Amino acid sequence: MSKLLLKSLLVSPAALGAALAVSASAMAADAKSISEASVADTTTVSVQLSEKLSESEVTEGTIGTLKPEPVTIAQAVTNSPDSTPSTTSTLNQINRYGREGRASASQISQVTSVSQLTDVRPTDWAFQALQSLVERYGCIVGYPDKKYRGNQAMTRYEFAAGLNACMDRVNELIAAGTADLVKKEDLAILQKLQEEFAAELAVLRGRVDALEARVTTLEKQQFSTTTKLAGEVIFAVTDEFLDNGRDDNNTVFQNRVRLALNTSFTGKDLLVTRLAAGNADTFSIPGGGAEGIQTFNIGNTGGNQVFADWVAYYFPIGDNLQFYVPAIAGLHYDYAPTFSGYFEAFDGGTGPLSVFAQRNPIYLIGGGSGAAVNFNFGNFKVSGGYLADNSDGSGNPGTFAANVPTAKNGLFNGSYAALGQIGFDTGKFGLGLTYVNAYRRGAIFDGGSGVPSSGTIFANGFFGFDAFGNLLGKFPTNVNAYGVSGYLKLGSNISINAFGAYVNADDIGDGFDAGQIWTFGGGIAFADFGKKGNLLGLFAGVEPYVGNPGEYGLGNTDNNMPIHLEGFYKWQLTDNISITPGIIYIINAGQSNNGDTDALIGTVRTTFTF
Image (cartoon, rainbow, N blue to C red; front, side):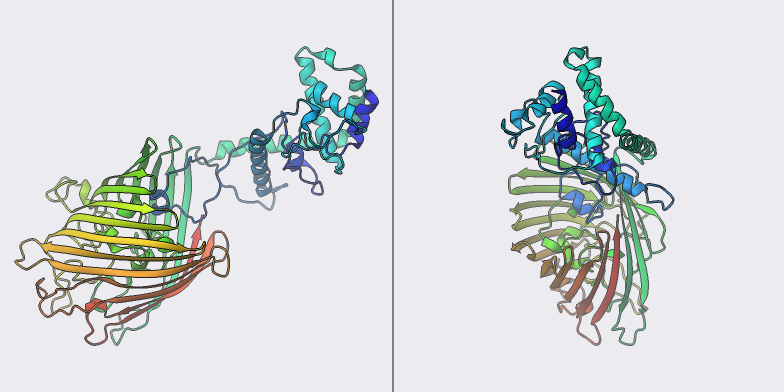
């Protein structure tokens, strides 16, 4: 028996190499990985770290349309050139340990009989030795496919790892009072092997000890056990080229930064606290409207001043109900699906250039503080929400009207928007029918900010400009809006989408008929175009405009359609960096074709996500 034990230890390939998870990460660089093996080892270090965000970026949509996942994170550590080995290497080792530990729990347990090894037969010359190792000492653990792989070569470090596992197992048997199972001959062989592989065992244990020390340091220095930090930084070089003698615009280098703290208390809920800053002002467009506004123009002060631009809480009740409670800057598309296919980027820097190309503008009517709920019934989803404006209409993100107890600035006696929607979504095809009832003291399509985010100045309820170029005021407006949105995926990489909306805007006290506001559009997007992660998009539509200006009290104002054409190509340079060149062409800006009323915006946007 003793000679067979020695033979199996010295000759049998992978007999002990698959027994210890530590060996795969702690061995020398030339050692072959055995991470695919399921292993049992009392010295395994298991640490759970969060996976990095892709797409990043934690945006309102990625949280608003999906159930929040459990949140655990360790503080990110950068690689130091002075560290040996590097911290990055250490983190990779820890992640590998974590994966191996999870795999062993789900694939195969400790082998208790040699018959469980499907490629070991009684006629094999080492069968008796293996049987003894398995049934007497429990030193052998099979690979995930329940094979032993006896003809596979192994390194000295792999053998040392397996030897260490057997030594630990023998010590456990002695400590448990089952020393009678351990033969003196076997102990003598183990002692000789320990002496022979003393150097390898010392290296192995030293690396494990060093790794455990680093893990302890990481645990002490981690940011939070319940909170993830996610961010997006946008750099954009952009210009409007058709000044037509106005000289209002220049080539500019703009930025916007968003940092989100995403906290989960139960693993199913999510508290979002997002900070933002930026200097991305909008261009002067003919007619003074919001046509062609770009996504990075949303959610910044214009002066790189840091402010809280989104604070909200998601939580489920049961399997079919999910609630959304925003305290600051909630939006309807945080919780209601927009059925926009690949064009929905939730005002981030990974999709279209413009706000309008992302989704139906009906979702921009109102925003702020309130509550919403989603009911899920298989492929059907019913959404409803009430949001009271956070802004007093000035456009300053620091003024939160719904939180101020003054007249017409409260949660229920100021500007609000209530949305109801029925949606059907299979993952390949989706369709949503949307209704919004609102009372607007500021712009209609403003996302609760008080200033327009899409459409002409007249479609947002303003009278226009006086002789000095100053924006005239507006009456409070009762709004009833009806919209339809849908998408269809052709294969795995092509998506087409379309939307349309009609808005009845009745200004209170002006004595004119209600305005009839129209908008519609559609696009086609090609995912992974040229490279995985890339996105090519072409879009055409008509931004919100008033179709009956004379009846709406706008006199001789034209009702020409403000046509929006857009093309962009997001090139995914790395997992965390993308570059998006594109153009936006507006025809009949300000819903007028009198004179030079077109606008051409060119942009090269670089987005960093982490």
